[in-house]
Amino acid sequence: MKGLKCIVTGRQKNAVNVVYGVRSCEQALLTSQVGKVGAQFAVQTGFRAKPGEVVLVPSSDGGVSALLGLPEVKKTDVFIFGGLPDALPEGVWRFELPSDVDRSTAMLGFALGAYRFTLGQAGKVLPALYVAEPVPLAVETARSIWLGRDLINLPANLLGPSELAGEAVAVLESSGAKVKVIKGAALEKAYPLLAHVGNGSDRKPRVVLATWAGSKAAKDAPLLSLVGKGVCFDSGGYDLKPASGMLRMKKDMGGAATVLALARLIMACDLPIRLEMRLGCVENSVSGAAMRPLDVVTARNGLTVEIGNTDAEGRLVMADLLTEASEAAPSLLLDVATLTGAARVALGPDIPALMCNDDEVAEALSEAGRSVSDPFWRLPLWDGYRDWMRSSVADINNVSSKPLAGAITAALFLERFVGAGVRWAHIDSYAWNDQSRPGRPEGGEILGLRGIFASLPRLLDLTDLLNS
Image 1 (cartoon, rainbow, N blue to C red):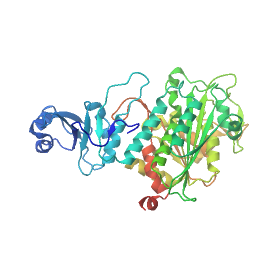
Image 2 (cartoon, rainbow, N blue to C red):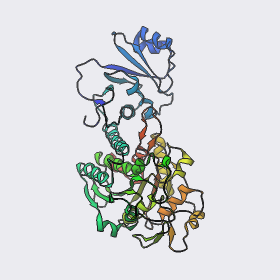
Image 3 (cartoon, rainbow, N blue to C red):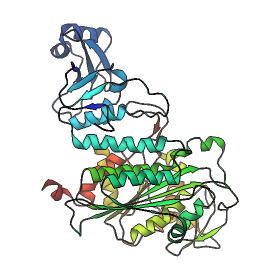
Image 4 (cartoon, rainbow, N blue to C red):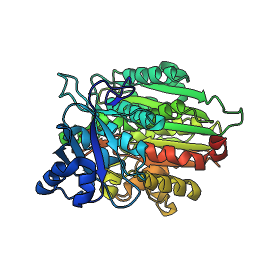
């Protein structure tokens, strides 16, 4: 299957090896699956059926089988299966799993573990998973996450604002969306804050605007609006980052990669909704034309913004896009951004921070994230901190006057650009794996996609439509 070579479909002429999922290393159980010799081998090598543990054993036909430990609970984390592509030898494999283990979860976990990114020599040949009838949602989710990971992993010299916009156009148009790319004078007029961020780079900013409607979406179908931060490299501007702080700044477009991957999944699954997506593609550089501390810029919604720190550029990129998105009165407005180091200090790399102006939206996202092991953690939009962004010369400063609650004050800034009455959720994501783990190779990561997608039936009242 294009883009997912780790998944094999159709008839297999070659022998297919088997991965058996087990919750116990009890001898009789293992014998029933891999035979007496295989069971003895597993026990003697210390196999304990711990979740995610893999052991290769001789099978009764003289080949090789594998045992995979599963958790006792019925709900199985997708990443339990993520270590298999590294643990299994080259060949074609299939699953034999307990009836209560979701086949889609197993497929997706294997596919996420099989992801590799390289611009040089091809890596080792990985095992393939044989699936007679692939679960479409698992395959499309994997394809979408692979897409997002690829974009984040691309070095900044190969993925500037124009290239990111071009990649987005190719994906969106192939999915049936109508796409516009705004640049030049039109961008400066429509998105003045974003344009100000991009002034310092020779690689000029772009805004990607896409619209789409599902084949079963009525004219008044729910409208989901997505906004993504696409800062292709962030030097910090005149408030220059230290060298260590720039090492991963190619990933500062992780929000754009996430919403593009989510949009692709929504369109591939033909959800009965209307969709709008906006990506702010820009580079934050240092030059004679770059924005300066204490500049004042008038935003799309008329607010004047003082630039207290040029390294707080992400919220400037997002602000005008949120204002424009609000003008269509969406059923739900959701943005994703690699916005603050404060969110990482609070929650670490694996849990995106969620800030939201609607309790029901926050509850739906949190519950869905837990259900698919793709969690969020809600932080408050605390009214008491709003005054921390006061400016003596403008309506608002882009940074807080206090070195505290950075993730919350960044979200409070964004909220000033969300239209009245619009249900809005902001997700502050790290978009990166600092080290390789099963299913999560070091590099770019698409956090929250599965959780957001799982929440949409409830958030957009789609349950009846999807069941009809």
